[in-house]
Amino acid sequence: MSKGKGSCLCGAVGFIANFMKDSVEACHCGMCRKWGGGPLLCVEGGADVKFEGAENIGIYDSSEWAERGFCKRCGTHLFYRLKGVNEYQIPVGLLDEQNNLHFDLQVFTDQKPEYYDFTNKTTEMTEAQVIEKYAPK
Image (cartoon, rainbow, N blue to C red; front, side, top):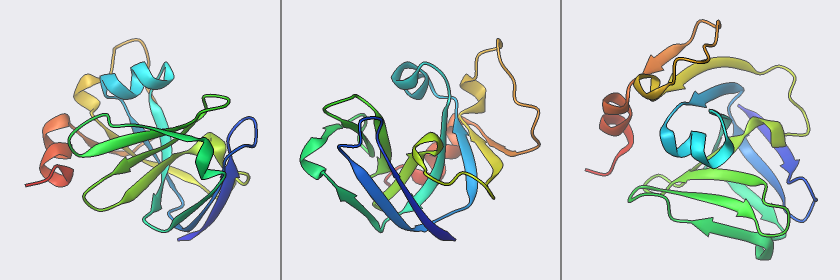
């Protein structure tokens, strides 16, 4: 784990994730693909994420167990947050420093369209496996 720092495209929102993992994850679910036009590539930022410019953050309550944050000024996707554990997933492209990261997990692989494929060897989880692990019980 390390400290991650970054910002949105216009700089109105900055963040520091104090316990960020160094692994990149991909989500292939339909919601993530609709949200960003492709799979969400993110890093787990943990629960200790501090935001500067929080007044510029909009929240979309995307499911019973998660919400998505975005910059109200430039539209940058800032995070996907699991409500039950207060865990932030931060799009990897927002990080100021992207070296020393490795791609190790893909989720909702059963929803991935056929027109793309990653060649990295990763752990893969289906929708049912993700729900079993993260959805509130």
